[in-house]
Structure formats: C-alpha cells, structure tokens
Image 1 (cartoon, rainbow, N blue to C red):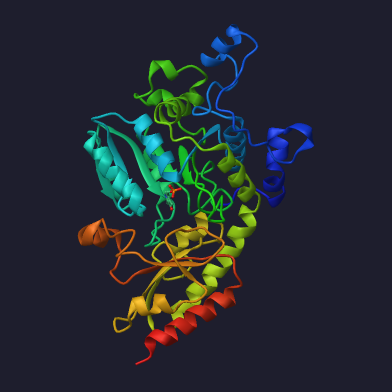
Image 2: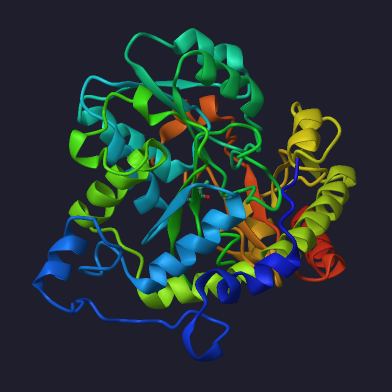
Length: 416
Ligand SMILES: *Cc1c(COP(=O)(O)O)cnc(C)c1O
C-alpha cells in the first residue's frame, strides 16, 4: 500500500510547508542556540508552551521544525520529532515513554544496535519478550497485564523477515497497546503506515531519507491512530494540548530537552535536501535490488538468497501487498560452503565493503563477524544470521555494473 506522496510534493515540500523568507526554496539554517523575546511576558509564555516559539535550541530550532513539518506531511502524521541519529530517536522515544515494571514485546530480528539498546532497557527494569514478529500469534502469546507497547521493524535486516504489520495492528487495537514501527527500510513512499493504523513510526534519517552517506539523523512521527488517554505513563505535566499531542510532548520534553539528543540545524537542512529525491532513489534502488537478487539466485556459487522480492521468500505475498510491489534495497546471501566469503568481498572493486545502508552506492558486509558479532552465536541463530551471510545494501548505480562486479568477484573466489 503506497502513499500518494508524489515527487512533486517532495520537491516542493520545504518551500510550501515552511514558507522560507525572501522567496528562498529551502528553510534557512539558523545556528542560534538562544532566542530573544519582545519582553519577559513573552519569554514566560513561550517557556510555558502558551505561545509558539523556541527557547533554547536543544529543545527546538527553526531548522529542526522545518524538517519535522516535512516528515509529518510525508507520513501524514499529527506531529514529528527529529533526533541526532536513528538510535537517539529509538532510545529517546522508549526512555521517554516507559517506566520500570512495564513489559514490552519486541522483534527477535532487530537491527543489532537496537537489540543492544533493548538489553540496556532491561537493566532499567523493563521486561522484554523478543518474539518472531512475522507471526502475529507470537506477539499475542507474549501479551500480559503489564504490556504497554510492541516494537518491530517493517523489514528486518539482514534476514529480510517481513513483520505481520496488519496482524500486530489488530492485536494492539484490541489490547490498547501502542505499536511503534521502525520503518527505516520502507519510508512512506513504500509503506502507508498511517492507513494501516500503526501508532508511531521511528526512522533513521541517515539511511534512505538523507540518502547520501553524509549526515546522521532520526525521527519519530505520531500517526494519530493511538488514543494516548489509554497510556498510563503520560505525566500530567504533558497532558497540555489535545490528546493527540500527549505522546510527542513527553518525547520532546524528555527525549530532547532532558536527554539532549538534538538534531543539529545544518543536519536538518542536509536531510531535507535528501528527502526531495527519496522517491526517485528508492524506486531505482528497488529495481536494482530485484535484478541483483535474480542474478545471485541463478549463480552456481550462491547457496541462498534472502530478498522479499523472490517468490520463494516466506513473506513474499505479504511484502507485495504492504509495499506496493516494491521490495526494498536490502538483500542478503550465502555462498556455497567451499567458497571463501572473505576472498569474494576482497575481490569486489565497485561495491564498497562498509557498514551502512540506504546509500546511493552499493555496499556489502559480512554480518556475523561485524555488526552482529557482539550478539554471539546463539542470538544470531534466533535472528536467522548464518556465519557466512553477506548483506548488501543496493545503491542507484546502473544495475549491470554492480552485477558485473559481483560476477567478476565470484569468478575470482571460485578459482581453484
Ligand atoms: C541504521 C538503523 C538504525 C539506527 O540509525 P542511525 O541513524 O544509524 O543511528 C535504526 N534502525 C534501523 C532499521 C536502521 O537500519
């Protein structure tokens, strides 16, 4: 299910939503940390949230608000908060909303750093069930009287498991649970999380939205589908505006003001420029990924390909329905047992061996020995990560050039 986000909307969003001064087409990057007021009465009124404005740029700045407006429009939400990184967004949201004694249900296939952060949360007295979110039944079985929220990713990496978003939404609606979806892999141009009734999305802006490997950022967007009156952890102090804003108000006060993981104004500008070409880049990325997955699938040296676009992928039909016929830019594969995975990676000449994803350039990474090394063999097995698994983040090059590079590297490592 695709949102009606058009290239036209993305290209003109900054100009039309933010109305920059002097006819500029970008909101100006303003680096001021402090803000001056007409008089003390106005200072007090802005501090108390009675009047719009900025008091100190750790809490808000014009540049961050301009990006938030664009992200909110992109997801058709009721509000957005930008953070310094994707991890700052995830940790800021969860630390702001949870308290000791809460129980949460989380995907067992999480992005490695998110998984590691969940273990930090456990040290603060939050109970966590890690479940297979490709089956809503596994989520249902984990619900207890202290459960407050469910957290998962649309498409996991490197295993490319696709969450049962519709099934989980149904359960969360029945049990008044907040459903937070990390949709980094499937921005709004691929997935209409609002229409599916997801409560809130969190995303790494560093990936497809920024898109060029030159800026870090993260965000949370409240999609307006959740009734915050059912969430017992909202402090009375933050029940100020209408109920739709309660969650984000608490996240801004705690996650930004108190914890300080604020997005820098210059970064907000760079990300907003990336956003203009999101659709174009993602379309090309998905086309390339499909072509490269098909090439790998038929190659004699490749044992297994993980890509939701392949008909034999366990959640292929679900991915097709949810992501409007697109399947994302991440694929993983395993080479035949007798082939040295390191020799293959070292032989790549165009594809870069690096950790990152959602870039314009195609990247490759051995996952078990790098980003999932800390998790250890047992967790890796539950996550479906084999020792020789290679993850690729497909870029926007001409697909044939990437295929040629993979083919020559496979030829080199298959030599006896
Ligand atoms: C990269 C990533 C993050 C973290 O984002 P950063 O901007 O690198 O902090 C979170 N979730 C997913 C799914 C990611 O791919």
